[in-house]
Image 1 (cartoon, rainbow, N blue to C red):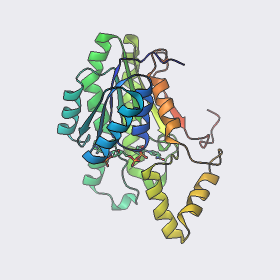
Image 2: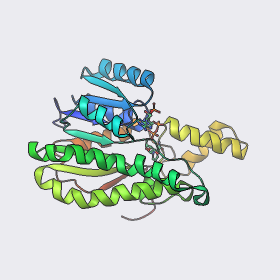
Image 3: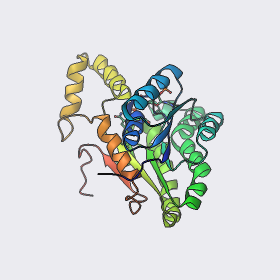
Image 4: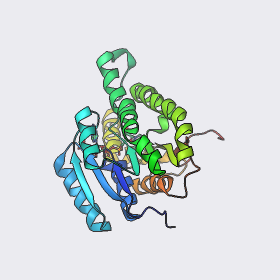
Amino acid sequence: MDLGLKGRKAIVCASSKGLGRACAMALAHEGVDLVINARSADTLSRTADEIQAATGVSVTPVAADVTTEEGRAALLEACPSPDILVNNAGGPPPGDFRDWDRDDWIKALDANMLTGIFLIKAVVDGMMERRFGRIVNITSSAVKAPIAVLGLSNGARAGLTGFVAGIARETVRHNVTINGLLPGPFDTDRLRNTIAARAEKDGITMDDAMARMAETNPAGRVGDPDEFGQACAFLCGDKSGFINGQNLLVDGGSFPGTL
Ligand code: NAP
């Protein structure tokens, strides 16, 4: 299926590894020129080379912390008029809400709510004028089914989701869609770090802990980041202009509701 994206330009935030990288790669395979981003310049530059070699598109790495104003300005300078914006950042740490002070909350809100909102604010009017825009916010299955130890994530991502639900109804008339993509468990560094900590706590091997996690999912496995990237590219396609204001779970059917 040709998604009609050849020659489009995308900013994909937090994309040297994991889900962001998979979104960048899937878009690149559709012929989208990319600005990719992460804090660690070495990994980012390696990823840029790999995507370029695999797809032939132009890939500009911007090493910056996307949760800062300077970081976002650097991304926008590299691509002032993107057709596609994929919002992403690292997730906040787990813990007990009794231990979190105001600074912890502000950090989570900055990373997982306000960063996305400020980038949308910076690009959405231009997208509407040009009559094409696709914005995908990588959030979490925790938006639909909160995870108690991830209270910072539950709260901050719910804020972004609520904000987007409002403005997506104003932008779609101009062919600019805004959707959330909600990952369940995907085999990324972040998931492996979480599972390693759990394995240590439970006194089991990493392989056993991974197998346990896979077994709790209806699919009997965790997700491959490529699967997530493909879903992102589809939402960005030129024929996806009527899919708007949605929050698409990509979780192997783990969420137990009918709808
Ligand atoms: P990952 O494999 O650890 O990759 C995170 C990527 O984001 C890396 O490229 C990292 O590079 C970059 N990054 C992190 N903080 C950044 C910042 N402040 N500025 C710029 N780049 C930054 O993580 P992932 O599993 O892909 O997760 C992506 C998002 O999805 C996270 O918010 C996570 O909480 C959420 N999520 C993941 C899962 C899952 O199963 N994987 C499930 C639910 C939700 P640097 O460290 O070099 O900056």
